[in-house]
Length: 474
Image 1: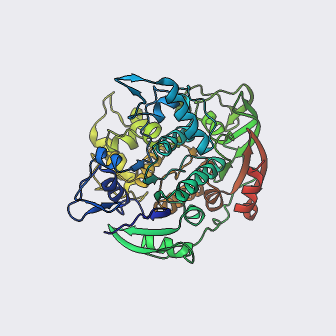
Image 2 (image 1 turned 60 degrees about the vertical axis):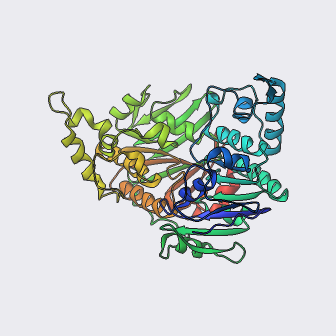
Image 3 (image 1 turned 120 degrees about the vertical axis):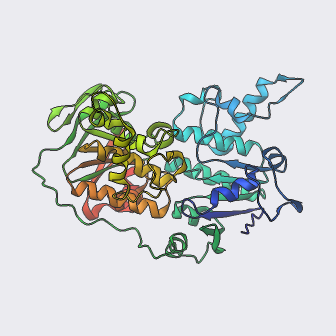
């Protein structure tokens, strides 16, 4: 496999999960040793690199999953591994100045003395990017850097990438979002099954060509789903009435009926995720009310919400959704343990049966082994397992936050089909997302949020990328 990262150019690296993207860039970053071939950096040939030599050569990688130090401050994270000072004495003023310069270049307003553990996912991602920017890398590898960023933060990142390109930095940009390829990349390379199947200039390359190259078959453009047969007179499964949570959102009125997919769309920090968290007992209301099947719903904890029939697929599946060191069978069955247990004892056979009930139904690509660790699955299949746990639990309200974050094009379409299938079976689905294409392809109705308030509602064919973007601007 060949890959050329040219100084002063942005190369978009595309491919479904498992195509070989991560392996290839980890070889460049020194995390993996190649079996053959060579790595050439500024004319110097290497059989392999390790993380130290790669960094010394100016190769830096920002991983999709955060690799920060939550207990340290923003400034300390930006200087990790290269503390300014002499004889073991850190110059803390220089640490803060370096952080201020990097954050200013990225266009992010963060307190350098704030602990990273207190930041949202998007802000923590920005700190990771600022760390690489401050290192003046010759070759910068960005792995899904915008997956958790708002539209404003994405534009700030793109501005920083453009400045790095102008200074001659070679940038490898891994993404599943094809609109970003057009926006930021000069060249594009597509991998499939470990092979390069397309390499060309972005100019003149269509979205359809990129998708076809990635999945090996033709996939349609962004389209609306078939209209759902929703009884407008039916009692809502989930309803918010004047719902307010201090500092997060205010005056939210929203209903989700049986058989309906309702999207809450907005930029990161608009309040969409916080509204969704309220339904699952992760956040309390300071005013207004949330109702479940007509009754006041104030669960106070996820345990109570699960018992009431609400399931949640969180934005960060690895940190908040899946038990990464446990098996796929355990991950699917965990909220159903009381039902699966006999006389207080839970047997592996019961968990295995629960997994097999949903393996084929959700098209989970794995070894079909209930004992397989969920960490060995691709991101899309991990997400299907987390989705399957609420089917096994027989929840009738499903709340999803950024459900396809970091998921490739093919798996994303499969997840959308499964969500639509759940709605057709009578489940009520609430999706909180910052991905406007996701709303277009998934939702029957959409409520757009800005600054913690609903600023517009759209239904049916009114749901377009143009209208969503317009309303989300506030």
